[in-house]
Length: 368
Image (tube, rainbow, N blue to C red; front, top):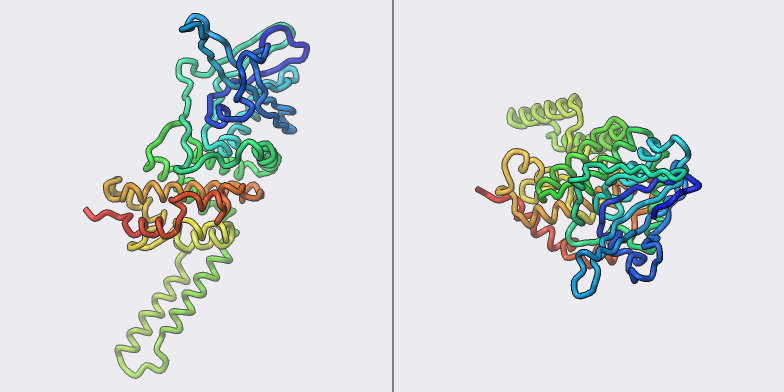
């Protein structure tokens, strides 16, 4: 779209994503549009105003074969630009892409932008020889978190909630975005390590720790009470007295020590994710039935040969769902049907079946 514009416009050029390609409005007759563009959807935010996402294309007759021209297409988002504010708009737009990338399960990369103002046209491309296009990498199996018919509503809800969060929370959400929709095509091990690191980083943040302190105290109090019940009343032998002394020492150590990561995990689940993780591979497990934490510990100290490859793949899929649900919790939004516990969409996935993943859980650690 060229020519003079009475109102300054900035067009953000975007990487090709599977969601854009398969969008219903992108399925069209290329010859039917005179200006060779098609609007996909429109969003609006207080910072950017109306944002029109479109598909554009050109015909390449030089590559034509058998009389048929080759079509080259791309995607952009157009925004009306107040004079002198393009840098602020670019900053706001980048933050918006963090949220949209989560929804489409693929990093939407800003390739550059075109500014049209009073007959002038300025084009800027970032790394033009390396567009850093990321392939569609959903948690397998699966598709998008939201489909065409609910995308706009969910996207707008998130865009309204995201700016209301404090800077620390916005940074956490951005971390989760890059963990869920990375720039690079990573191995399952790399995805798992990075995603778990972001989860653990969130669990140990002061604000989360403050919210989970009461839960941790209740958990530890219950554990201590059980130890006290194990003590022998009126011990009548040196052996019984020695046992009681050891239990008293254990109780004293627990009361003096800081809560362990496992207790922090239990507190995090109880205060943040109660009812949202019970259907998934547990965060903390045992040697016989390792959780996500045990898998991370093993990968950190050995290599992938110590982990059953299918167990790792399924555990990473469950971790992805957990993080996606956590993002919606942070934004105080209901989780879309595609990731709700027990939803028909999830229940169609073989990897979601409890009997299947619990059997894999027992096979996770490979003895060398």
